[in-house]
Length: 124
Image (tube, rainbow, N blue to C red):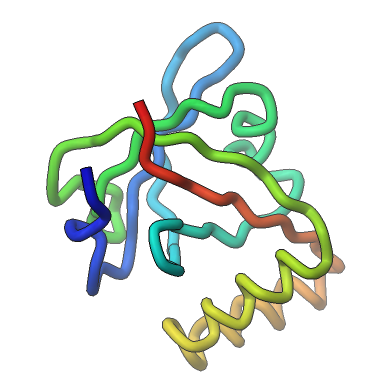
């Protein structure tokens, strides 16, 4: 498997799993750094909580509404709340999404939101 399907895409749909096994699909902005995809999200978001509990996820490139553009593939996801990781991923997001990302980050700052990163690697 490769991440070729995610190149030049603006969104990915990530399916995370509740403790009871029920899947929840969410479209998100993401960045690719080598063979890793990163998501920058609020620490208290549902997807961040679910990834903390269950690291197995499914991902697919998608439209903004979450409609997949390819088949979902299995992956492993892990949170990294460290300031270095958040800063690194924020920088990658700024490069990819520019002014729009700055706008969302500023709104989050005004709400005093805390952020985490989700590192996604293809897996079985």
